[in-house]
Image 1 (cartoon, rainbow, N blue to C red):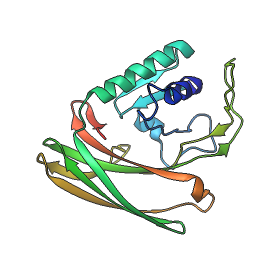
Image 2: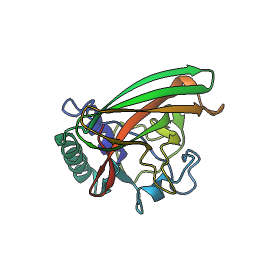
Image 3: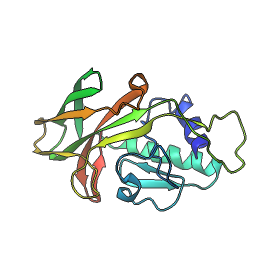
Length: 204
């Protein structure tokens, strides 16, 4: 699955069409995030890729994985974004403050979230016979901190509320970066979710 995701995301056709956040949760992984995202996303088999908090792709061999990942990305991008998002962020030492503004493209209910990811982590990983020039033991885009808990095991974001088309809403994030993290290797993904038939889905 890692090989398939890497090859799809670095291909000319799909480069810059997706944002990857890697959740390490299986078997007491030392890089597991600070919340049980696997449970929240309904993950029961590994490896597994969740798209937009809605659909998932399980492991079906390299070629099928490549095809399924491409189809999931295409499906995601075929839908118009329900809202735009802009972020102003400052980092001082290990303190991060970000103000997120959401502008609705259509009437709807929206939430916002922020996850801190870290690159360059190392750890031995087993991979069933996958060959090729892949570095499976360097882990990038590892989810370190999740700031999108709505309630219970729902991590679809903080409430922005119901907005009319053209309406705006804001949320202020304040986070403390753990001293064990290498700050220069960290980045943050911000997302907007929108209420759809199956709950809240990432729309931008």
